[in-house]
Amino acid sequence: MKIKSIKAWSTDLGNTKPYTIAFKTIDEVVNAFVEITLEDGTTGIGAGCPSEYVTGEPLSQTQEILQEQHLAFLAGRDIRELHQLNFEVWQKFPKNPAARAAIDIALYDAFTKYLDVPLVKYLGQKIKSLPTSNTIGIKNVEETLKEAEEYGQRGFTVLKVKLGKDLGEDIERIVKLREKFGQKFIIRIDANQGYTIDQTIDFYNRTKHLNIELIEQPLPAKAIADLKRLPDEIKQTIAADESLITPKDALLLNSAPRAAGIFNIKLMKCGGINQALKIADIALHDQVDLFWGCNDESIVSITAALHVAFACANTKYIDLDGSLDLARDVVKGGFILKDGVMSCSDKPGLGVERI
Image (cartoon, rainbow, N blue to C red; front, side, top):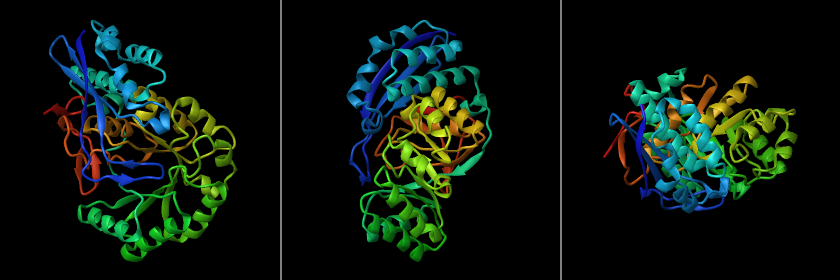
């Protein structure tokens, strides 16, 4: 079955709840989209939302790569050559993972719709459902507690709290969350590269009694040697995020001594499903748990991340809340969310429909 046409566009999906992390405030959400149409009318859709700070890919570059003249090499190709097509995309756009992700997701969606099977089933489903964390940005104690209360009322049981600006305030926020809510929530923290080695050790020791599930990327992305110097007890709770972009990074993180016990995989960092599966396999062989994250993204790419996450046996955590506070989207359907727990639908492909 040949690809008949490819089109691309960008849309500001809006953000109903702007938030702050260690290095910026998020107040708008522009996603780039790719739609592939096959000869029989089957369509596949993909989405990309780059993080320039992490990968060096600005949105303008993503949009430029996704101009239709750059995608013309896919027209007339057989969708059944899925892996070859993704290999060529990777070769053509090596420095644009979000653009590659948009193309990759659209190819996978079209192919699995053509097969009339959900993407997760095609990949080999290992997991049925998991609770997603919902993210609280860097706020004062009062605002943190208020937002946690709101999430609890909506059925969420896992919080990811953004830290990394002031160690004392960071610890106070976690202490107050436990004082107010007890063990109602599983708490994860994301320091977004905001700590030093000593601060990471200090944070761990002073919050150990508070039952923090994991610590995401406390040190700068390139400080992998410093991650490896942390005590083994702490490293086991560390989730490598900005330090992990490519499969090559995964190999480096796992070279002795291992730098982290958890890998945070994001489709927008690595370039889509194809590359994410390579990272996941490296983690599986070295007994590293997987934590699937996201940017502020359309239901399209959030659903794609969920499907690939549930196809990996070592997936233990998901943080796929990136579409929950959007003002609008270009599709409906996709993942199923009930009381904070996410699962895949049984519809072919991603199970999304254009609005």
